[in-house]
Length: 301
Length: 261
Image 1 (cartoon, rainbow over the protein chains, first blue to last red):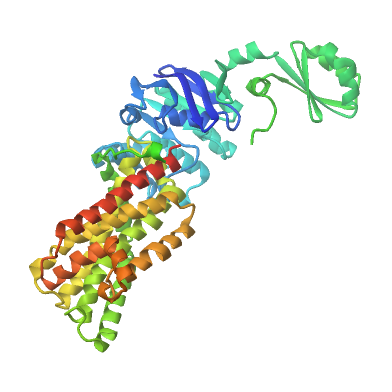
Image 2 (image 1 turned 180 degrees about the vertical axis):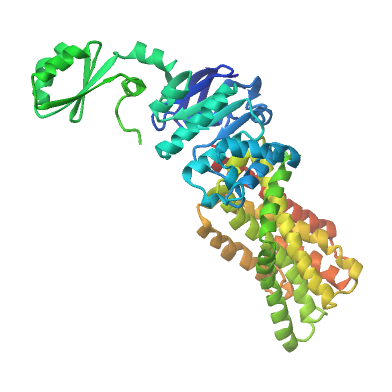
């Protein structure tokens, strides 16, 4: 459905995307993860043909990009990172106007509007102005807008950033409906939970390069020990020096917390119980642990 | 910038962009018309009657007629300029409407052509309103000749729409537009024979004036108001086209650098 080979984009001397290879299969939900500045948004813009790569080839829905970007974009719906709904139009008018950009007749778009409003849960807001919508409603409308021409493929750039949990769950439900309907989805996100829940496969990018790629569970299994015990409290330093190496398969000290990665959490917990001043949290390892292991804990801003 | 400079790839897909602006304008058409048109009309009538009553004929015609012809050019210049500066900038930079449109199968060339043709439409509206006053007050030589003012007005809109888009492309904020008005638009109004004949200027400034786009606009509009055929029609029209087209092409390159890097 989507493939990129050797994708490279330079701004001056900085290589933002460096020889990236991506393959997204039809009907799959594919995640693009990475710290800020990893090149996720640039990659999406390259894939859409909005900017031209310095090297590499892209094929989107069977169409060469950027050579035939216009035709390719006919088949793609985009939910951008920043809301850019048209504030001069009502909810319904936003959908009507957007359909026209795809060359749809007024009648064809109008016929789709009720369905799209229902999908976005905005049927009662059809005539509301954009300024009257909450953040979650705006996101849902942006998602509905991206579906106006019934695309095969959807690009979502951080679709739930800045939303409260209720609004986020509504977006997830919408995305699940789309996945069930057979749409192919490419999404970037900072939320590991989101990637774990929604994506069939994901790629982790860092410094414009593909760090790893695979199904979320498979990545967790292959990159990290099954359980994590996070330890903090008085006497952590001493305990770490004396015992961490012995009971943890791998450990990492970050600020005031020790992350102990292990296949045998019981053993770690037994050891910790000897030191009542230490508190701990035992949990299964997750995608975030993989992400932090592969991209490091340094801030990127 | 040269990397981004290329011949525009034009397509009919600009039409929905024009239509978008039209539909938004339609919602507030009455206040917008009043806001855009009252100002030049007040100047024209106020100065025309007030100052005109003190003056003998100017360039062989009553001052009100002289000023009316200048106002046609001047108000259409302003209409297009305001549209591509403040309104286009809102859509491009503040509301990010252009970004949204470019996720559909439209290119920047289409979006900016839509903006340019919309600026031409606003100029037509503005020019027609002044023309209506000219008709109403009987300030013309030949009614049929004044109809030629309509394509002239469209051309003036194209010229200043294209030029203004360059400014739109390089401005970090609305405040920047003031430079364009103080350094380009206002001097042009004073140098191009809107309020008084260019022959009143020192020879050096007359030489400068001959190259300015507004002079070409005035030189086309004024004879048409009087019912005469303008001199050098082709040269004036070509100059207006050239300024507008060059503006559009340069603005495209600069905007491409700004938005699509």
